[in-house]
Image 1 (tube, helix red, strand yellow):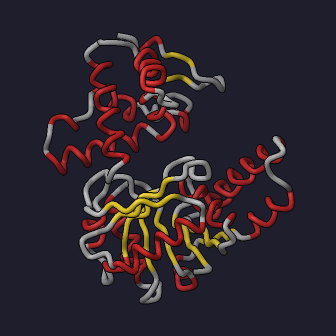
Image 2 (cartoon, helix red, strand yellow; image 1 turned 90 degrees about the vertical axis):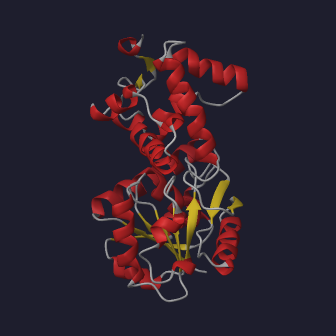
Image 3 (cartoon, rainbow, N blue to C red; image 1 turned 180 degrees about the horizontal axis):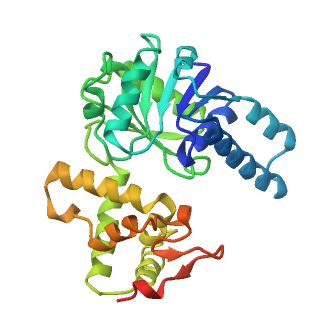
Length: 294
């Protein structure tokens, strides 16, 4: 395996591209527009520059790493890839359509992974001609720092695909675990969604403020971030989409999101990416939102 293609150059896609390039792979970073890819590469470069400033990185290695990443808006370039990882928006229809188109260009023995956070792998594979080559490759952000990679079997995923993904994970410095039964949210996000839902309910019911719930989880359970802080980091709309998937899949009220989460998304208050979410980041640092106090 020499060439990896990443579909999507956003926060997760650029992070996956970085760790693949760092491991010596040739990386084809695809997106709909060149400007989006350039933005992703600038984000990688900025992160490396920060490490150089701390003496943890060298200019030589930075240039070598960036030299391994090649921008493309041509999906047909997938014919050059040994392994393709889809990292586009968490929307079933968009992913399904892209994967169907992608399959026209890859060779018959190319494995395809999806970085979906919640959508069942078997569901996404239904429209593919070679579902045995398809599996979940679920990374965690920030990708360069987070060691876990969830490898998720669909009903028709082959042993060869899982073994190839495990080897790939080790090559890029990740610790792979295999999710043997395909289920929405897999392992980490299903557990984390349950924590987030209880945090949501504690806030919705007026038990405590957003800030105090976060403090409780950090000091009481030694979590590095509180559930609302983490939701702001990963994107409120991403978490909301995941909860909706869980609710629709299990038809269980415990997964029904609170109205305040929908309100944040409707107002485009998505967290750090928009400068405001459960907290206010307008001035570069996290501030408590008095308007969300109950």
